[in-house]
Image (cartoon, rainbow, N blue to C red; front, side, top):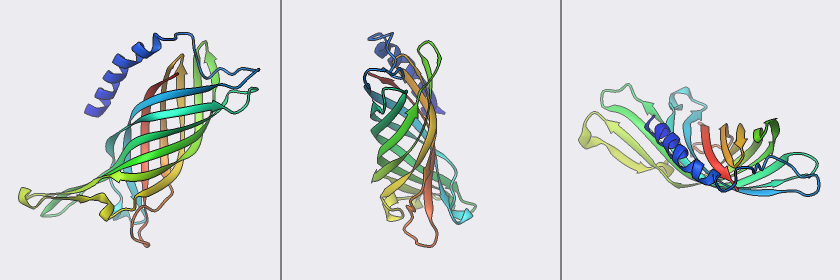
Length: 218
């Protein structure tokens, strides 16, 4: 919740400053004579978990930051269809409570450098307000991460690299919907990991993540 409140506060402070540069521009509009492009910045939160073939390996959700930049290009001048690609820092993972006399819980933090690629379609709702559902995928490379074991005895608590247990490469499907007003943009979506990031060939582990991003398009 603290991360969510921080995100909302930052968005409230930053977005009006960007919007004042151009209050009449909306990149969801399409031009019948030529295609358009845009650049954007994004800041958001992930509510992530790990899903496994074995129920006892599944985790509860864990929040993490996401931020980066995107580039979008209109695919045809006859319709508001866009291809958007980006580069993002994204924190995923999960945590699991343990009903044990010595261990309280285990947390997995997996930090990725991700490249999402989606196709968007812009629906004009009212003046300068567009709804933009999207579908695509993402590729991720693990760049950092810690697995922490919280024991009841503080002296026995430990922290190791998450990539002792997980592979660094990840990819999956992405689906969601965005809302654009002039230069301001917000979106909510879900990442379905399809790669087995676990190092065991028998008990596959996959990322799952609900994300909320806000940003501006130039």
